[in-house]
Image (cartoon, rainbow, N blue to C red; front, side):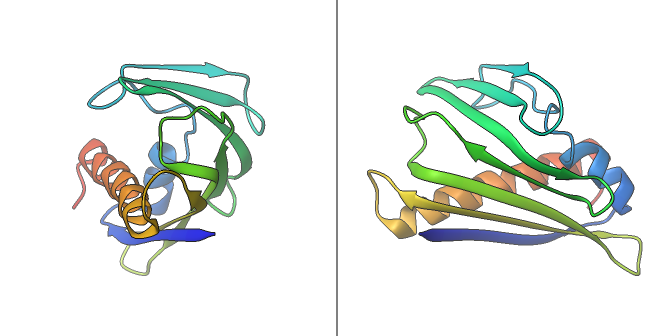
Length: 140
């Protein structure tokens, strides 16, 4: 199994960052995502993201607001992303200076590309999501 990990700081309080990143149903269409549909609520819910290359179906497998952590997995075998057996965990940690450390870790088997490229692909997704959270929160 390969592992991709991104650790970054967002200059906003952990509760504000959690409202954005901890909301599994918070992804909206935008660059790279043509449409998103959600089914269910809480652990077990799914989000279907339609991309130009196909559909990615992710399922929320763990969600703990008190500990500011959640996990999810890609559950469709025909996902266009270069991963098999993909799962990821996002953990938010409050810092003393009222900023938040975001730790985003994914594990998977690369599919159709070299492991190093698959890891770069995954870290790019995580970095982009954190960048979007900063923009949404108007935080550095």
